[in-house]
Length: 451
Image (cartoon, rainbow, N blue to C red; front, side, top):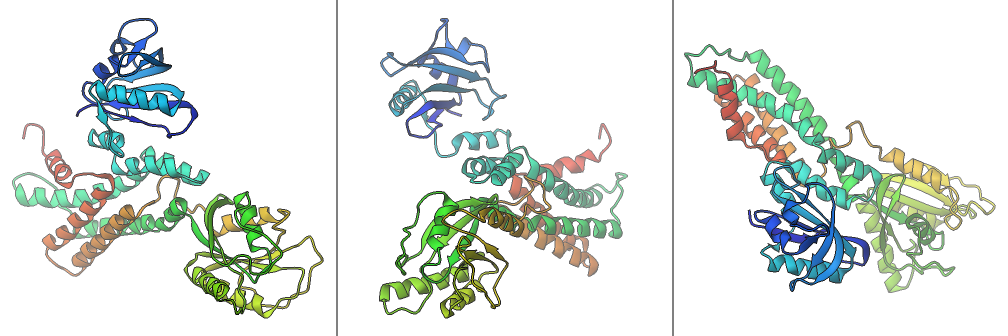
């Protein structure tokens, strides 16, 4: 493949900026833009070791003193000859160096092209390629741990045994039918039923991880509810760690939803601060109250904020009814630093005493949220983290169920085989594995040497 180049770090002032090059003629391109301090050519320096030298612009003039490293293929990220230049993090320096690489024969890399080449060259499967961007975009430690394990092949290792069992069924069937003279043991009906039943259980367990994967990648949609002036915006500010929302003593300050993200208890929350729920004649505020109710109906978690220093009101009860629209709710008895009022009310969830303004009780809130959204039983990396993976497993599961039903219903073997191959195709989409090549290899693996 032709040589490509790109800036791999952010386009901002920083201590270090990195340029990456890969492809055919990579080292010849780099020879034109880098001079090792010890003399000679970049293409001759020791591989996988940093080399100090001068970075040159299009006119051959030095624009930076930097470190360079070359990675001969196939033992590189992309499987091709690769190189990196670790420069001072000036956007001007990086831009000029990139232009020099273009002038020397490289072209601008497309989005994800380095990782795409790694996949095409067999250095990673599709789940590992997707884990690269998941790791870059991870917003919690749990998400990062899952992504790095998936990058190491954890999800592939969970899918492959399932795929191989189905492949065994299909290959035995074809081998027996197409080569009747060979002494190939046929699969019994009981063995096939047992294999399909076990496969169905494993796919159901894998599909059950999709909810956790969505939480890791997208976060939990969380709405903050309550009547005006109970401390909703103060809670939002306390959770995100800065003054995101305006806080005043004037009721109705928040008239529209305010959205922000925060990691709470190791769980990424997509927080929505809403207008205080109350009856109002203000048309704008009334619209904000309606949006608050809509946000509650769409949320996965409601944080109901009540003023613990005051008796509950009808507006509090209206906010509580809105909180019940969400599948999970936590009640926050705010202003716990003040004398507390007595309550006699059926709350929509467990109640915690907090002071949003002073930060009191937030550790208990973190623990409660962590308990509501636990890591689950699946090890890190063995979790479906996107819609593509989830849809593929869903189709595979439906096909396995169809194959099992056909077998138990006494249908002809080709009906069972058709659904088995559909399941294999769906599972192959997860990693990028090709059915035809694997099936052919497995069939002829059953022959004796010399046949």
